[in-house]
Image 1 (spheres, rainbow, N blue to C red):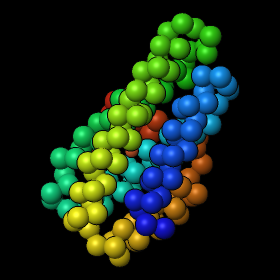
Image 2 (tube, rainbow, N blue to C red; image 1 turned 180 degrees about the horizontal axis):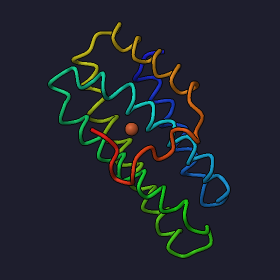
Image 3 (cartoon, helix red, strand yellow; image 1 turned 60 degrees about the vertical axis):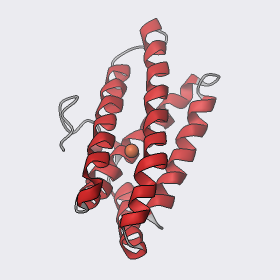
Image 4 (spheres, protein in one colour; image 1 turned 90 degrees about the vertical axis):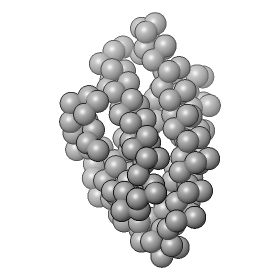
Length: 152
Ligand SMILES: [Fe+2]
């Protein structure tokens, strides 16, 4: 699958979970799992490939920083009970961060990628992403580094 289509499907699923989570807080674990895989696939496959294209460097580094914020918050939420007031505040913040990130990717990064990368490159990266997403169990990719130290 083309890398952009792969990610747009991911984003649709995140957005659906974000809509439903207010009425069903138990969906948090599904959202958490999706985010961890999404971040892993982008940081291990997509972003390193995109950094080979010099004109994409700044956008990729911004997206990478957004991931750091999302993962940091997710880790803080992991350490707290769902009923705590601050957990609910963190959930609202997490939603905002995710929507900003999705918007940045879809409005700025993806059109730029499509104008600079060949269809064959996008197919190849998409294939690598599909393989990676199935290859690594969530527990192994969760927080590989200290919070905020996702590598660039
Ligand atoms: Fe992302």
